[in-house]
Length: 238
Image (tube, rainbow, N blue to C red):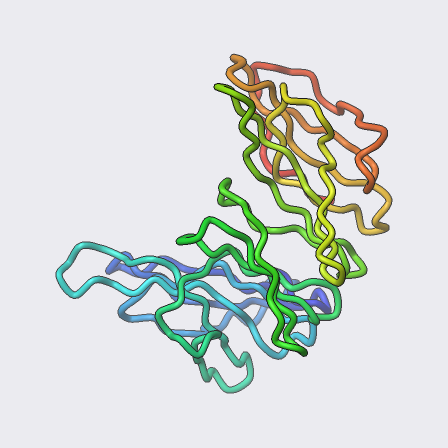
């Protein structure tokens, strides 16, 4: 995860006991240092706050019985002091895939037990829950006003996966994939200008890998960038 100023990269390092710690390194490859020691947990998936002073990370504590790492919980880390505390007052509340929207007014994360994306207004404390059973985190528009999520749509005995745009202020939800029930869409990401959305698409039950597509923020002008069924393309990035 790259800091907002582009100068620092935060990442996780596997420990000999199969846990993981958080480290940082300058973008020029110098000044490698440990941010957080996690002797009894897996600590990973760091997400910088827009100010660059704090990180949200996922913490999976080891089960004392030796059953391995438990479910994910979100924690704050003060990059300067190393202080770390749970994000939520209820320290047992589960969450993963934390992403900040825009200037940091909004924080989205996956609520795995309820199979939803929670969009939380840090200033007002208001929360919006959006159904999402794919396990994919939200992707925010550059202005921080719209979150993209994916959700499974059932039609009789078949299903498709569509991409939805969620207006964080009005709670309005728009199906960007349209009425096409023959697509599995996912992993959307806005271009830096906000003019395009890149995403993955495949036909349900088809013997093919996911291809890379583009569309406008309103779902129009859907364009295939790749057409190589034998290749499964990963998440696009701008």
